[in-house]
Image (cartoon, rainbow, N blue to C red; front, side, top):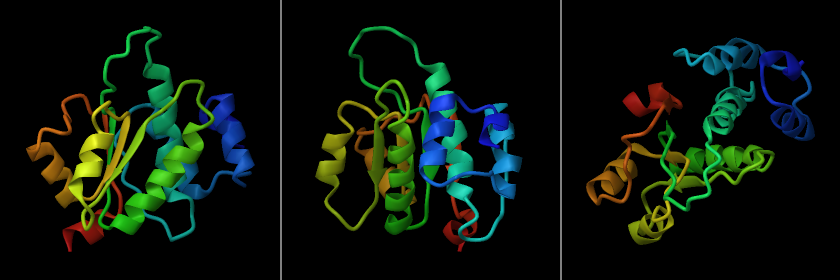
Length: 166
C-alpha cells in the first residue's frame, strides 16, 4: 500500500481519494528513492502513474522542508519540472495542484508555457512559486526577463525527456 512508501498520511489519503489504491511498479520503484533524494530515471507506459510517482514524493519533501516562519517573503522555487508541450505542462500542473490541496500549508504551483502572452505568467510569478512546471522555451524567456530565479531549485524532473531531445 501507499502507506509503506514513506508518504505522510495526508498524501496517502489524497492518493486514495484520487483512486490510487495500490502503487504501480513505477511508483513502488521511484517514490522511496525520490524520498531518499536519489536520482531516478524511469520509463513506463502511458497510464502507469508516472506523474504521481514524482509528484507525491516531491510534495512530501516540500512539506518536510518548510519552515514555520511567519514572514511573507516571496516563495522560492524548490522544484522544477520541464515538459515538452503546453498540454503536458497543464496536465502535470493540475496533478500537482490537486495533490497539494492535501498539504497543511498552501503550495503555489506555476504552469508556464509558450503560445500565450508572457505578461500574465510574469505577474503570476511575482510572489514566487514553490513548484514550476514549464516548457523549455518559456522557462528560458522568464529567466531572461528576471521573472524567475532558479537558484534554490532542489529537485528537477525532465518529463518525457526523449521528446524534448527530439
